Image 1 (cartoon, rainbow, N blue to C red):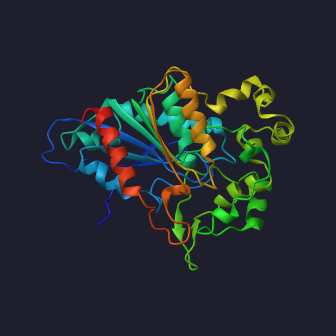
Image 2 (image 1 turned 90 degrees about the vertical axis):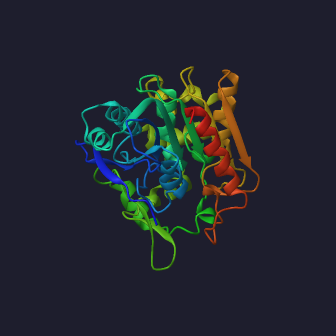
Length: 341
């Protein structure tokens, strides 16, 4: 039976929510429980804390091991900005640390408190952008002690995958794409502020998020507009594409470079997993993060999955890829060690 979370609003200004999956292990005494803060995927334009794509090992296995799992929404790009998403990370972590929230009260009523010294941040696909903010920015407090990055975005916004036209449709056959809707959304500036748009199966068997916002992701890649929208710099992608990779960073205005979320000395240890055949989010993103961390002498564990696709599942059958269970075992073992479980 699927786990049933408790839902809390962590930012009343936008009604931004998190789902809390409480620990289900043994006697619930006054133990301080480790925390997983998880950010959903969706290209930073779609997705939800309770998305159908939320893995059961996150919502069920981790709570059974004694973790408090917090699956959080965040403001999605367009009309919201990358700065807004990063601000939500700060707000969320402050909420988690506060002893006066509804979440804290719910835990206290069960004889539990969360251990702010044992927080692991997790991000998959687009959710890796807010996860990376938590992992790299010293201003995010309490600071996570470990970072799980699964097929994540945010590693290299200057790569050809973003700054040159790219057709992601061959790799998104399980998703229903409507270009006319994408163009309309893009021209409208994205409409109202959105904090969730979860994916659900539709009549034709394919997935589509509730507001059809993932159309923007496919369209922006196709038209090489993603970085323009991310950085709020119309035309920047064309300028970046016109020069060699080594010259691109210099073209990003100084006041926008923080949105690239460079690896910093404050970055916590990371476990990064990515498929070499990922056609939705290039493995270059993960390779870049790993390289930057290694160059700074930071701890990083890598799992490059040969021939695997985005999400680690078959794009036709939607069944888990071969070897996925072993990867999950490795991840769980790594997390256990980080929190001294």
